[in-house]
Amino acid sequence: MAPRRLSTEQQRAIQAAVATFAGQRAIVFLYTGDAEIERIANDIAATLIAAVWKVTIRPGMTFGGSIAGIDVAVRTGADQKVEAAAPALANALDKEGLAVTATRQRQAADADTNNTITITVGKKP
Image 1 (cartoon, rainbow, N blue to C red):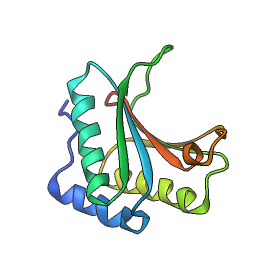
Image 2 (cartoon, rainbow, N blue to C red):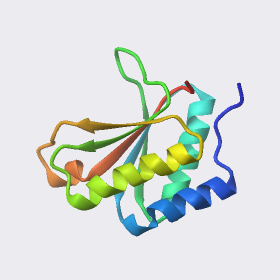
Image 3 (spheres, helix red, strand yellow):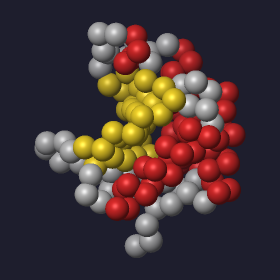
């Protein structure tokens, strides 16, 4: 099974799809200890940074298992721009052949957290 990577052409296509959301905050969460996950997470982060998104990369672990594929999550209570940016990103990643789900997280206490998209990168399905 070949590792997931984004070619230059794929990165440009994703950048074009999300360019109207420049300034959007995103967290790229990746499960540590897997080089393939780290590579595709870094590809996604670099692509979004090139599209002028404000990206934070957060490696870590979760208890109770991990996900397969990539999840693009938005919180309940997010503003309309975030509500539009998250599916635009999920669709762009999907169009480039990545396994993507879109989920909703519960509302946070502060607007900054509510308006940050969380992209969780798990193992290749």
